[in-house]
Length: 371
Ligand code: SF4
Image (cartoon, rainbow, N blue to C red):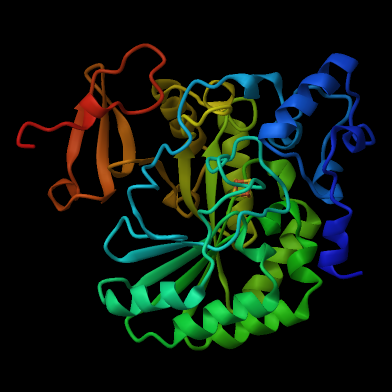
């Protein structure tokens, strides 16, 4: 069976979910309503990681709807993606990076997704024509790397993945190409069972360096199969980086976070970011951890990490840039621009007196005197 056949067996209705967990009639009705707005879909592989006896199972939290998704507090575009869109499917926020929204499909629709507005729904945000995006990138010589994401870029067919790689590796000023994909975590057979994909990645990695950016959020996701998919990528000259999202009820314990990050390093995955969960509608109040608690969790996790694991940066993807959450001093939280949309903010350090339970920076927190 190919990965495409496997995907046809995805669990995409509340009724089918009953094979994996107990669902009450009230929950069934609520989940059906939620699914009309935020679709359900998961691989059988990922749902089999859930402990059906544990209502607080972390994999369950990420894969199964919750009535908390009815909570529409927040926003759908928390990082200003619409402002950075230069053409359909192409975003250019930081000078050196172009981001391509290659698809709106994923092997699993994460309940905490920050692109809930588009995954699995009708959208006109994804790229229709590679050539136009390639022309834009060719004309902007300041761009030295491209992130192909979505959705999940490894849900693209192999010939599409090859088309991106062929075009982009021919551009002199591109140093490296990244694929944003959660398939190592939620659908590892997509990688280890497809020698054609691995061959394509290997071939083009000899022209330009290729990175996979994935998202392991809990140690239970580090299964033999997931590790096998990572090893296949490593064996084919691909560097694997991980971005963990800090999620209430999933990984908001120092031990859990430390076990995850140390486990990633043990298996050859570079820990890249721990991201503050974004205030997305249907996500914010279910998954966000306030800054001061989140900072303590990350710092206490670091006590159990060696230097390689501590390469992570605890950051937020704010509308104005990628901002590192550095720590507390005299009742204020310190922040630093790691990447900035505006040149005058590069490397800027600033402090904020946080409001109780504040979990995201407000416009007034990032207004500086000289602006
Ligand atoms: S794989 Fe990524 S884009 Fe897809 S639903 Fe999960 S978080 Fe969202």
